[in-house]
Length: 333
Image 1 (cartoon, rainbow, N blue to C red):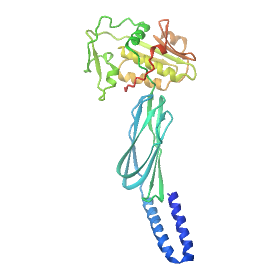
Image 2: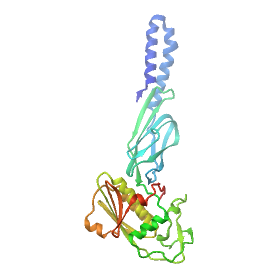
Image 3: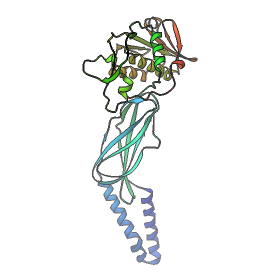
Image 4: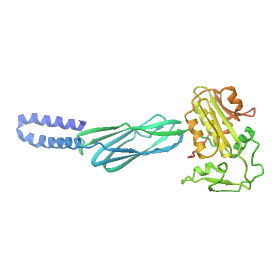
């Protein structure tokens, strides 16, 4: 507990009034000093009796680079308190202004603010600080809350056109394709439907998060594809975005996709949860090179060097810049 600048100003004013009272009599003391002392003592008592607020952080949903998320903190007090609430935003996240709110805490209050996801990876929000004061603002007391909430950010996924997606599928050398099937319509997912038929883009944009399935005249088997990704030092963000785009496109083509990077691997599977797993690995991937045996075993190699990113498959190469339009896909998985 300590005096604010306003509190010290009151002390100085009271001290000056006491000095004047020696010259002009006690009336100056009664008129100025007594009210100030009463207000200051009341502030000291109020703040000293304030109990530590109870704080609960709400989880922050994961997202892609460039998206925004809302941070919510619920604060509970037993008595009304004037307070200033400030939160810290960790690296990889950005707030338009410093998250500070001057509010009156009474009962249960929820403080919210928005952050932008600026860099892939594991990030955190916090710690939180609450400064309570008396009504006049003469005395304050600080409460620190060291708990921090994690925020997981996936790499950017670029939008690609249908023609480019087909070109990538052909580049991979896939033999089991829907050459004789005609797309009919999208419908809601029913239990037992093959996950390879899920249309991930449309499903992700639905506010209720329900899956949508592509309806065809016939069904087909699932082809497994392994994507290997590597890069030189300092280009890991570019690699992560390129590999995330490639695995997303292949999953949306109805394939079972696996991923190998210098510091981890995920076996081929399909489905929404598997998509999250792949993007989660790419969110934390670091620079590094793969051994020659791993490159040869992969169906697709995404390689980033000082000249850019190249997709290699079946002894053919495709610059990633020709595959991606550069637009952020903006999906929520």
